[in-house]
Length: 147
Image (tube, rainbow, N blue to C red; front, top):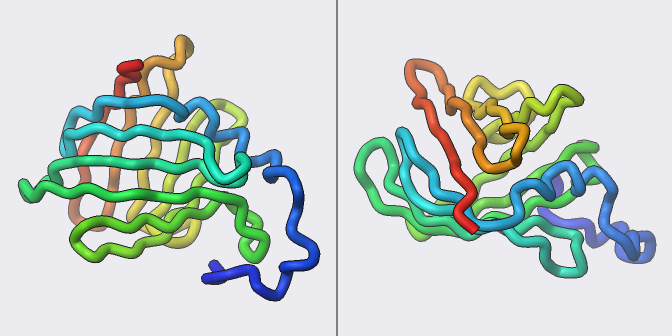
């Protein structure tokens, strides 16, 4: 993922990339239960070009953590990519994908990474049940819409 799109300044779109709509179901506040309990609030921002998440969580190792994430269309990788920054100095990238059957994927770094989340949004749009998985570990999680 490019750190910037400076070279494309003259050709940046005036409207958000249509693939970003695949993540609109996340807009709102969610209570996260399971291996990393906490809350996440998502909103569309900056002209609709970004899905913005603000979160507070307790990691599986018991550490309190808060941060912000910006998700947008990445022209270089042709994927929905994010930058997540947290109060422990984290500056991570993630790749998002929503399959036609409603399965949601989030990879730590690039698509296909062995550190990933897969889950499914309930038919009523009020819960997301899934699992974070990485070599040697992982945890189940359920996120419930609270707004």
